[in-house]
Each structure stands twice: as structure tokens, then as C-alpha cells.
Length: 293
Image (cartoon, rainbow, N blue to C red; front, side, top):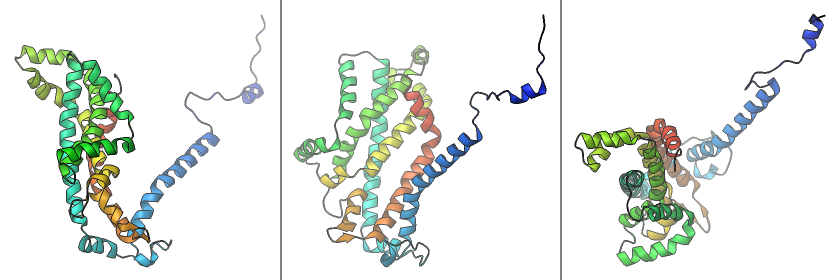
């Protein structure tokens, strides 16, 4: 039998086999350019608002960002408007929504995950279906309900309204997260003499910190940045939240870009702080909650 030895020329002409996941120089360059363009697109609006807030009012619509840097917009916003009142109202509403949202979502998710009770399937379907309705459809019915309960123009009305948005989604997510926690932990708590609530409080919740972080973050963002309900349910400058207060800077004749951009920057700070606090749990919590439905 005759074997043909591979010559250096044959080895040189053979195509290079790339390993799995290895990209060509052209593909790698195209990928990096795409990522750079996407990053610029994502950062540009935020940077534009920040730089505009540092410009005098007469230069608000120009591209001369560093011509005359000033903090006049911030001082005017804090001293000549009721921004601090709106900020305080938003903190109260968002704080209560976050606290109650975590409590209700965690307890509901745990009950649906661990117990069998009449109406369980109906409850799960109700939580799912309530997420299908757009805000525009629900404003009038919820407005009439709040008016009948005397909760219009009160923070409690907004808190209840925001809970109807955050709790269904968060309860479903927490249910999926609790499904990933072994039931043997509940059984060990029962052996040690713990009540169902004691098992939930002492054993399950400490293991559910990632899911609780996602629930808290979603509930806070829902209340902090919502506009439609806040504008419809709250009137009077002293009762407005930040979402409603910002609309006062826009009228039929134009917009006050200076104070509006300054307010936008200040409003983004608490949301960024909450995100930084919860970010280490966000990916874990969202992925774990999506494992089982």
C-alpha cells in the first residue's frame, strides 16, 4: 500500500479550521464597531440632558455645551419651584409601593408555589391576565374606583394603583423563584417545629434575596417613573409627584428646557442608586425566576 506524504505546499494550501466561537478579524472588527455605535446611541441622550442642564437658558437648544457652564438651572429649580415637595411626594409613594410590593408579591408567590387551595388556578390566571391591559384602558375604571373610595389626590391612591401594576408581575416571578428552592427546606422547618409562616420568614426568605431585590427594584421603578396615573389622579402643585411636576415646565408656548433637564438629572440619581444597590442580585433573580412558571 502506498501512502502519500503531505508536502509543505499542501499543508500551506489547506484552509485553516477555526475553533468553535473563534471569529475572523473582519467579523471581530464589525462586532466591535457595532457595539461602539450601540453604546454611543445609548449614552448620547443621557449625556445631552446632563450637558443641557449645565447651560444657560438662552443656549439650551444649541450645541455649544461648554461655552458657558453654569449651575443656574439647578439653583432656580430648587429655590423657585416646588421640586423638593414633588421629590418628597415621590419618595413616599415609591417607598410605600416598594415595601408593600415586596411583602405582597413574596407572600403571594410563596403561597402559590407551596400550597394547594381552592381558587389557586384562578388566582394565577388573574395575575397573568391583569398584565394584558394597557394603562389607557384602566385609567378611567381605576379613577372611578379611587373617587368612590375618596383616594383621589392622595398618596395612598397612587400606591394602591401602582401595586396593581407591580404585584402581578412580581408575584409570578417570585413563584418561579420559590419553585427553584427545594421543598426539603420547608419540611426541615416543620420538623423543627416552625409554623408555615416561620418557615417562610426564617428559612425561605433568606434564600430568596435575589428575587426580592428584583421585586423591590421593579416596584420602585414602576412608582418612580410612572406618568399617566400620577397626572390623572393628582392635582395641585403641593400634591404632585415628580412625573406630574415636570409637566408644568411644558406649555402650549414652549418648554423650559433648563429646569426640566436639571430636574431630569436629579430624578435619575435615586433610580441609579437603587439599581447599583440591587444590581448584584438582578441577573440571578430574574434568571432564577424564569426557570419555572
